[in-house]
Length: 350
Image (cartoon, rainbow, N blue to C red):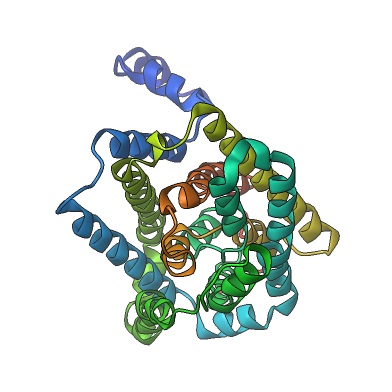
């Protein structure tokens, strides 16, 4: 039956409704626009001086809150099942510590002449780092993937990276020093695992509330990513690394970073499908297996490369960090839109 008030409603729309409809048709995701706005903000108003510890503290609080919420949201059984999902974990580890280093060696062989010694070293260093934690889990959540498996995979990647990254640096780069940092292990336990465990303990009290207010976790997901982007880009602006490299080398680094990421995303996606993983696990493999951690990388660079110019060395990592965030934000939204009403396979029910 026709609505007798339809003509009236259409005729009396607010004057800005056509503009709103037009904006909805623009093929750019709102979260990508937020990322771009965050980068612009960091370029115009980077955190420096007394603002740096404030921003760092805000990022730490956001990440801790994210893990606390995940701890309160996830059933302990789901976490155990994620750890026992050895095929998935093995594929992510292979991508992080085997596929990436091989691609890095190939890239330096092909483009080392244009990159120079400093950035070639930085590119190889990028390729031996562990995966990110917070953004891997956040993007997996946005894409409606297997969050418990992502949590376990990203955390294990960083723990393994405390040993694997220095070993690969020694093997591929002949760096001096042990490179093993108990402080890094302590930081992971303090800032990531402890909030998660506290969330698990608080789950009987607040788990139901969080399940009923899923928007809370969504806001923290996206908010933590935006804060990491701002902090990382601010650091690059303040340190002035953009003035230490010419336009040609910068373009080559961006190109190589983009190609490496595209190859890893393609290989992990095809491997997950060829090996018969469901969609939720495929999302974990793609996002956890394609990331490199800026938060872990910069402290490790200070330990593994004392006395070397860290600005140029970490430039490939900083650029890769930005590229992976934009690319994975786009992919996460595409995964999420594949079926708005579908609960992905592999996510344990509460």
